[in-house]
Length: 432
Image 1 (cartoon, one colour):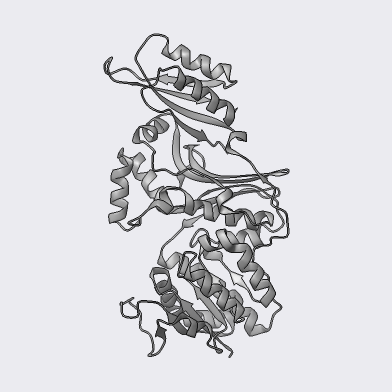
Image 2: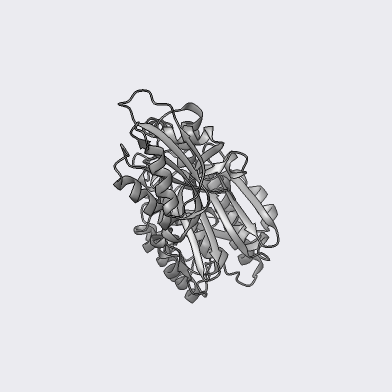
């Protein structure tokens, strides 16, 4: 039986999960693949920490290039993360003629065109199923299960940290800062959580999904991104009272010659399928022109779920190598020209507004006049009872679909009118 030698770069949480999975299910994988997956070498800067797995002597090293240059190794798994040494090692592995498996969404979102171009020149594969959704096989779904479909829209909850925070804010009525601290203590949020809570992790994943679905490279820095750092517990409470839940949402939609791709907090109707995704779970809804809406749900991060997808990618490459099968291109095709990406001001949406106003006669009339003069139609208004004349009164407005440029102009008029006690809050409502 043919043996496929594998080198692993990065022996952290996910790396240890991959090793455990390969050891635990070695016989099962051998039976299913018709070949043996042999983890020959592992490289990590820390060679002393206990990861809870037993390795043969000489397997673990701090010299990544010795693993890459080992002529017996056919596949390199990159689980270092980031765009520094991870990019250097990945390109070196490709140049050495190794196939690569990675979970590095940041690297692919920011440098995917360079990496896949290098792989094409060398005739090797780059598999990246674990880069989006952890244990959810969304990359495979788009490539294989929905290959006959045009993806008309994709909506995703793609960051477990943010979803955990928003779920607890709603259930417990706790403000953002308190829940973030609890998430850090529970290990669901990093000590520096900015990549997650400011929306950039979700944007990297949205860029990869758009690139796969539409066949062009989407620069991550071209995506409009809003995070949840400034989200108030009051807005979570008011949204719940109005029949909505707030989620950090990735929106990807091709519209003729434009691409609508953005990340932002959004109000979802409580009966919407994505609204029921809670805690650290992720989900992606894909609207195909033939299938209609399909939903893919599961754990979006963590050692075992991500390791499962990494090993699935390994298995695909190993099966092809063992059987001498023709190469199956798994990179992101960059053949199509990137269409114009919509500016936020061009988006049409319904909106939730929270305006903290002075308790004075004529205030509500000034708000409705300002919105109406800018072609923003009101669906509903709720003015909460004033506690006292010295405390601002929250006025919550739900609008019909409006152009964001018009709404922003109306809010500027309201601010200029001097009736607000603090900056207005504006959140998009996504009904689909």
